[in-house]
Amino acid sequence: MSGDRLRILLPVVSLAVLLASVFYLQPRAMSYFGLNLLFNLAVPLALATVAQMMIMMVNDIDLSIGTFVSFCACVTATFVHDAPLVGYSILALSVGVYALLGAVIHLRGLPAIVVTLGMSFVWGGLAVLILPSPGGAPPDWLRALMTMKPPLAPLAVIAPVIIALVGHQLIKKSALGVLLRGVGGNERAMERAGWSVWQLKATAYALAGLFGVMAGMALVGLTTSADANIALRYTLLSIAGVILGGGEFTGGRVSPVGAVIGALTLTLAASFLSFLRLSPDWQIGAQGAILILVLAVRLLFSRRERAA
Amino acid sequence: MTDESFDQVDGVEPRLKQLASRVVHKPWIWAYLTAALTFGATMIVSGGSGAASLLYAAFTFASFAAIVGVGQMFVITLGPGNVDLSIPAAMTLAATLSLKFMGGDASLILPGVIIALVIGLMCGVFNFALILLLRIPPIIATLSSSFLFQSLAIWSNRGLRIKPPDPLADFATGGTLSIPNVALVGFLVALLGWFVLERTIAGRWILAIGQNTRAAMLSGVPLNGVRFAVYTGSAVLAAFAGFLLANFSGGANLNMGAEYMLMSIAVVVIGGTSIAGGRSNIPGIWGASLFMFLVVSMLNSYGLGAGVRLVLTGLIIVLVVAFASKRSKAI
Image (tube, rainbow over all chains, first blue to last red):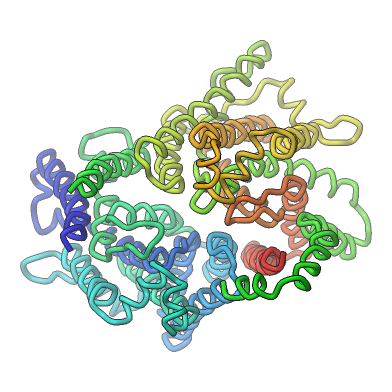
């Protein structure tokens, strides 16, 4: 338990340090409005990161999540807006496709990294078919939801907290979560214990699909339009976010709270640079540098953990 | 998982079958077979016209994928978790900086090539330093360093498109004996890769690490030395491919490497190399590279839109992998 606590401490501290330096550089960011602007775009990324986490939980990796979120954004901005019934069916169907992928990957022993790589073409192609040029509009309720101004704290702060809590309940507290992490920990043992691993893997993938759909919808709600390339960067950012949040590639060691914090950190890293008035050329580089920095500190932590 | 263990228990007969299937099905045969099929399917539509020019184009474009593929193959051979995601960024960075240095001046070609290769070397050293010092999984190490390389390329390039020196551009776009020059270079790289893999002790070491890292270490394989060589090798090949590609397409641009992240992994796996590591295949890389280009041109020749083309490309990749994986499980 204390190991788990220590594991989550580092992401929290790194986010706090980054946030403090942003506030130091730009005190005006320390307001309802400022926070909302800072973390606005973290909401879809946090959802996508949790989606990636579901896949990494079962020892796979999803290289198609960026194109999948783009696809969902395109569906939301077109079908869900114009013909809700068709739109929601498409989204539900795509979650089903994810479940199917999980089952097939397990049953046929396929390399997830390559299958999802192939699927990234498929989602990207479908997105182009649905929305050849940028455009579309979010359904009214979604726009209203994403621009909501709750009292006390802005939505951009409340939403990640909710996502983290829901993820935590689902993965860390529920019986299903234990089983799913068990698949990542020792697939064989789960099988011997009588669980159907392919069903569990399909469930993990379906959950990833579900969070991916929500990420796409949240993105359209924020940006009010979509295009086929809107979320391509999410693939790599979501992997980085999971790792930043203390997750591991193998062994089912993931943390939904950490993943959300990782996504927030990466979003903040980008704005941090603009507050430093550094050239935007370095934005991507800053995300890389912060990733490396946090991992370096984590190494020190884990050494101490082992020593203790 | 269970299937495998049952196979082992069953004994002699399946083992004979395994041997037979191993002889009949060389792992790389599928890559060439599917490439030939797609070529045939394209020819049926075009009525046989343009076969020579299609092949010429296929060999040209496949060579870039093949060069980065060879590097990626060695990385993937090291075992699960080993993938070089910094290939696109290393390509872009090397191409941008070396073209900027040459500035179109033909007398600076040799130092230009050297600069590209040295940048590749530095990218590889940086990647490996992250893996070794921070003990982070190679996927994340190469991912985070690719962010840095990319930023460096953006910063140095600033949207300028510098033309390559004319002799270099002529070489990259030209051909010798109706074979594209870049393809000749690609063959040389593949040959070199094959030699390293099959005929040197280093190649055996790489395979040994991929098959069982712990056993390899205990038997005295210099683990870190081999990994260092593999990661720098991959980055150098990526830089070289980026350099060639920039000269071929008349200048470097910032997303020139983008498609090669996927491509480098796809050609390795479709070419018959096991994603689980320890089993590599050089000839398959060329077959798969040709296949990847021919699929796109086949779908093009059917007059399909960009969207449909992408969807079909993706489905074909997934199907080929599903097929190839079943085969590797049987062996």
